[in-house]
Image (cartoon, rainbow, N blue to C red):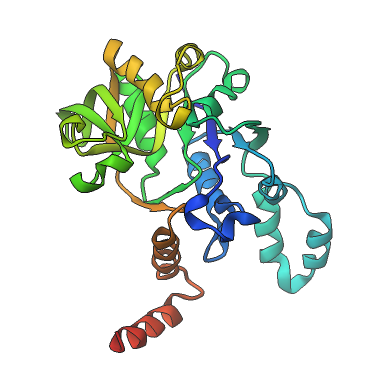
Length: 290
């Protein structure tokens, strides 16, 4: 089955990058000249996703504004010398069918995904975390979609993380199938002790889930921090019918992390045709004094 729908949970408070997120959603932080969430939407569009639901909360209307038409700006840009920029601006609203829904109460990622039940219907769908920008030649979500087509089971995108940091992430029990693809049969959210760590593979930023996840979520009790955890619901699927894990290629940037924000701007800037030469020269001079 072709996967055409994606859900982007973007309702978090962004507490790790306060005070910037007091009035600016972290999903709108710029990476050079585009907000983070546009990179995520563009990744989805590249693999044939046509319908995208972004889950927000109060104070994040600016995200909807970004994907809307801006007649006043378009009129100001409608000049012979600004046609390229005009097309760039107009194309943002034509990327996909982007809709929005609010998570009225921030009760966890699982609760946010449950808000997408009517949007998804009875078909598999992509989940693309709003904090995670992943840049690479082969779109990360496309790698997961291919694995779903191969094995017919829910898929989680994973990366190896340092053992000492596993208390901040989910840990998966995995068994290699081939290359970078694994069978996943168990998972735990933020293991508190070394003994609870199943492996150093953690879910980071991308999933492809079967519609059955909604029935599981509706019966999932609050877990860590009193929230409905998506990991707890996925664990039920992993331990019963099983899931697939893909160690995707591409560089992940955590947009809810101060260092991640800087890394994204620098590394993307070094590839940007307008500024790469000037940025390289600047960094070379800067490094001399470090």
